[in-house]
Picture 1 (tube, rainbow over the protein chains, first blue to last red):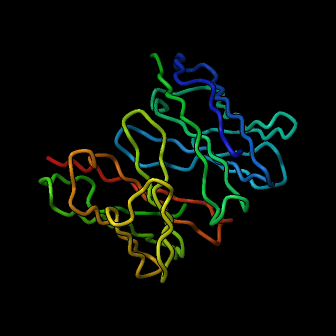
Picture 2 (picture 1 turned 30 degrees about the vertical axis):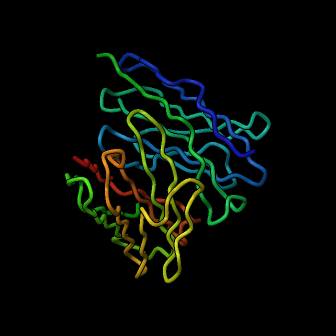
Length: 115
Length: 116
């Protein structure tokens, strides 16, 4: 079955600290992988995406993610977190297997940033 | 990146009335748009896939007569919540698929619906 798991429901970090949000997926075909961020009461903003090629992808706002096929993971990282990064982060997988390239979302990880 | 708008951003209506929500892709054409529903502190639940010029495809458990979807042009899809009830109160988000960008979905800002 196709699924996305974000093991951490809630994470708290100090401003300036590094961050890693975990994402594991199960997908029957070649996956397209995405990270989105959602601020309270807002829609989702695309942070980065992976389709093929270099397994380390750079995104907006200083985020990066690494695709590891052997671990079925696509973890999101940021070397130094800013207070404005506090938000909900969603990992999603899509691709040709889903029909109309539907996305399957993880449950999300809520990030809190301490000053 | 591609921009998707939604209107209205919030709406309050009386029980039994109908509400229409618009989703527009502003700088690209979208043959496919998606409608999601999000409950507080939860992930997104896909309601339906909207295809330009054809009938929408609804996910299991979503009442198609309750949530009417029309995708009349390559930049506009509408979701009409008919005979709304308080349990329909939710945050509705649309996304548009950019076929020129490997089918990446870009999301609108969402619409908060409150049914009294």
